[in-house]
Image 1 (cartoon, helix red, strand yellow):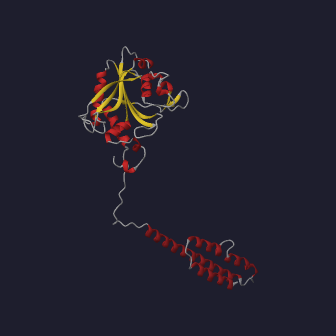
Image 2: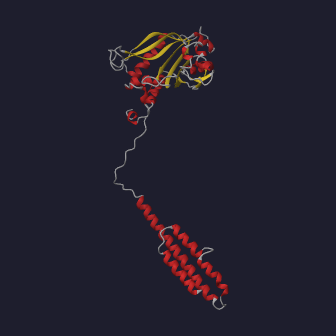
Length: 339
């Protein structure tokens, strides 16, 4: 049994000197000192020894156990030092190496224009109002004096969820919701996404953004509308910008007008951008129809108002001289980094 113990000591010392990982070290601990380990198996046979030999063999076994445990601990400490040194080497930082420039995110061009529009009207005392994008037919059409047979209510132009629920085609429903809950004076803008069944091309998209405005109070006139839009156009496109109003028809305003601004490229002289006309259409506007006021519980004999709406994409295309609306949605970093 003494020979067996010395052989175990010799093999343990030899194998522990070659260990390369914590996993190997644990395997060797189990191999020699575990419940079914070699040293334990030998010690179980001590009962067969003569009484006088047991103390000597027991002392030798304890010495060998202590030797193996001490060697295991030394090996563990050595492996930890090696692992720590390797980690330090791998994670070493050369402070003399120049840093890498990180590109910071920027506002999307549509967000830039949307924020500028908001700032212009907030500066004129308007409040921002919001409403649901999934809207009822009543708010999107009926309350806005749009008849049942109007082309805009066709499925070719509108995304219907069912016969009474749809994706809003304009932000005008927000104006109705505000007028139902709040009595004049009212002075709001309604920015947000709208949806129409359009094929995607350089000037159309099924999803786009609008900002609509509404003012309702006593004595509001068409002159107030024109002055407001003049201030807006000059704030956004430059102090020399002029506007003109052309007669038009919208079911929810009477009288109605389409509003043009003098070309931001040629200043009204005529160029490729304005197709030689010197003017570019940017929005629709008009005096709120008396029927719309009545539906919302506002007396049209006491109050009057004006409303207007503009497309953010078209405004951004003009402001940044962009000729294809699809660029706003393709997420091409080369395009977006220019803003």
